[in-house]
Amino acid sequence: MRIPYSLELAVAAAGVAAVATPVVIAVSRRLGALDHPGPRRIHQAPVPTLGGLALAFAVLSVAWIARLLPGPAAELEVRPLLGLTFAAIPMLALGVVDDLRGVGPWSKLALQACAGLILVAFGYGVPVLTNPLRGSIASGLFNIPLTVGWVLLVTNAINLIDGLDGLAAGAVLIAAVTLWWAGRTHFDFYVMFISALLIGATFGFLCFNFPPARIFMGDTGSHFLGLTLAAVSLLENRKGTAAVTLLLPIVALALPILDGTVAFLRRLVRGRPVFRGDVGHIHHRLLRLGLSPRRALFALWGVCVLCGAMAAVLSALPRAASAPAALVLALALFAALAWVRGRDRGRGGGGVGG
Image (cartoon, rainbow, N blue to C red; front, side, top):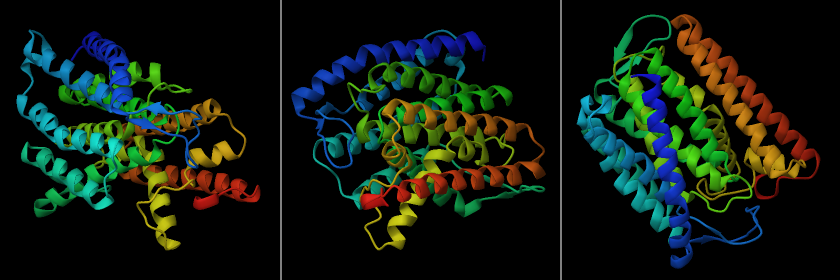
């Protein structure tokens, strides 16, 4: 897949997102799909949500148009694209209902798992577990739970980090760039194809989501982006091209995954409902330490860029060195989170999530 073609796809998706987002803003206002100020919010006035509809429309419409028109995408196998499209339906339905009325945590997990099973039915999966030292192991019967678990992990990581204007969209954009690079390195056309669409769609949406945001992606967007990132990661893995199974996307998404995992464990240890939001996420702490929303955003984007660059390096390292290097990065990130948490607690911050 030529680099100019990837650029064409990204520009097309960005253009569609830029046109569709104002329409979604108007529809959100008409439907009353607004995110109101509150204790866990940083905005001072109601902001339209449902922005994920514009993101999904940009990715899927450009994908299918490119697939149907003459060009490189016309040679793509249609099954993975069908799988992503059908899996997006329950995710988008879940997101819209959640943004309008709210959905219970177990219902969310059930529909997310349903989307994961749809991906499995269309050939996505983790067929091989790569040994960091030598050889590979067929996942066998564990393929389905591993695939569904991966979809749940990535989707909820993106959902949990979506608490600061532009953060989730920017994190997904950076991760998509990393996966595009991995696809190019491994000559995987499909990975480059979907990643380029994600890059363009999130860039176009950020024109309206950059602080102060004029629209939020909502659960509609975080669920769709999480699903699509998970699917691209599974595409990258399906031919055994990753140095260590799923290691590259895990490193590329290290910040949202680690922040979400810490939040889950924090609530579990303190006996609080693990699915109930709090103000203990990294972006909340940075804001309490005095950073402006934009400075906090740039700081966290910088961490995401660092993780993405590290993921690209890991993909080129010998297999025996990739897992230890990833472990060192994870420990460094955890130490940084602990340092920020300590500074926050030292200033009397934390509230519900302290």
